[in-house]
Image (cartoon, rainbow, N blue to C red; front, side, top):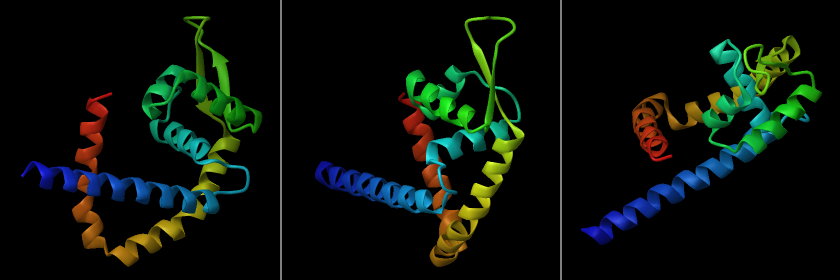
Length: 147
């Protein structure tokens, strides 16, 4: 039984890792020139939450180091996609919000990605996608709980 569980676990993670790599490659090709997946992810998150976040909050959300998030935010700020301001309550902290240009860049990225993502859903079939989503969410929440 344990050998079967081990083989199943290895197969599961192998499929997820391979699918992740293939999806990242396709996403990178579909994103507008100069935009990286990490940039899109941050812009999409800021648009979704609709309020400022500190770099530390963003790093925690994306499970990356503060240094990695600082690097991503510096590139986004240089491109004019985010505004970074001092936290008025704590001068040691900064606050980040999406800019109008960042919102437009995110919208362009969504427009570029949507046909590719929709095609994958069509090819898999909506019923299969609906069936797998709860399993993937459960896996994600279990992995997040272990951080």
